[in-house]
Length: 122
Image (cartoon, rainbow, N blue to C red; front, side, top):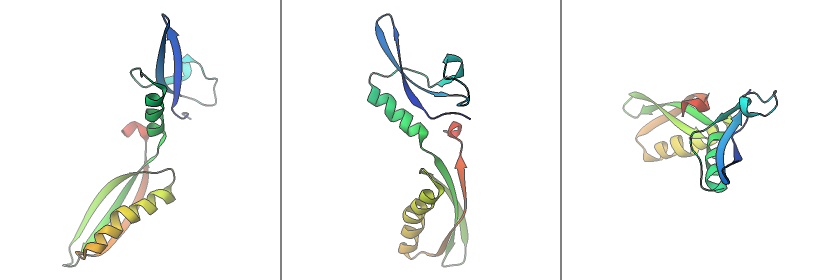
């Protein structure tokens, strides 16, 4: 199982190199052969940590259907960043279904599938 993304500091030629990495297998010791690095270096720890935090956020694919007042149905998808499926569903309700229903153009909006997306998709 892969680990969470973290910030790494190495020194080469007196220069501090800041990178973002994760362990490939958390059941094994943390060493260079058990790490995956994101390409490039960062000027500050804050920049590197911002990327690590973003990479550690789970992304959920929300599939939903909209029933128009005229009877037609349209399907759509959205991607939501959230830590848990419950948070993803709550955000989908607040950001997708509720605003659509408030317009009055729709009879109903139904969320019919929620799936976690692998981080390698992004």
